[in-house]
Length: 202
Image (cartoon, rainbow, N blue to C red):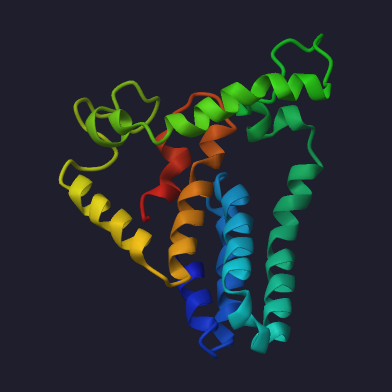
């Protein structure tokens, strides 16, 4: 959130905030596993959506991206230096083979596509979002969803306002929502509230 707010401030000719934004995007890698996927995607989305507004600060954006790469380098080196089986993603990924006799071919990944799509859509299930999370592995409260009932009409109004809006910010909101559930889609034990916490602000 801070990184995004800094970026939006930075494109209004306050380029220092672009550097600050990239610092916070980089630091998010050290906060939890999910941002290691969502933060780069969100940063790329911001650069694509507001590309016209970043033209006058191209050098600052480039320095910011270099700063981002510099900050994530230690954790990236640590990740790639370990065997995949010893990493967190190796233990929970839907792409991890339970039966190692199955060859790692394109067909293997194609067969996983229905599971991937099902996992993705399952995280938008209104039952978990608003009514009952008791079957979730973590953060489970009986007869309570991840969101409150009274938020339903507010969300409906938000969807309508987004649909009517002609501002570029609406694409940021949509992009944010689409990528926020990716970590949960790629992992076992779906749905998992901790892996889709990035959805909550939007």
